[in-house]
Length: 125
Image (cartoon, rainbow, N blue to C red; front, side):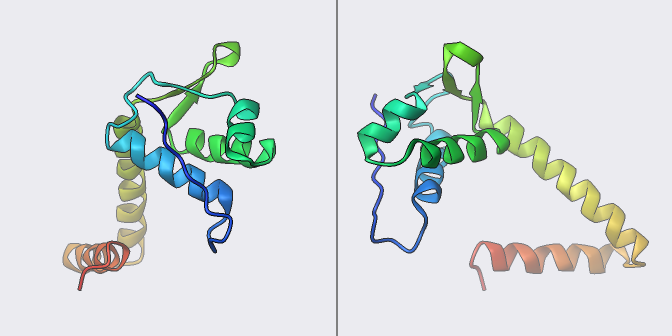
């Protein structure tokens, strides 16, 4: 299994974001299994023709999202992202529920606001 990443220098999307999104998608789709060792920042930057800081920024964002984990000198690996994503979503949902209640929304109104936001975020009508 090989990590397949392509960065389009002509894209309006920043290179670090292209890199971040592709690694995240491959990890979530199982193309990159949990425990897969990612290339070093410098090596990957050289391979892709990017600045090391660009790859480092993508790795930092992926780590903050729970997609990858850095194990010091041992390297950077794909983490069990599904669990981290679920935990973060649950925490965000709990925060929203508390805020909606403080705002005086009843359960139906709070739930309707969530449904509207989800439709917008996922491009559904």
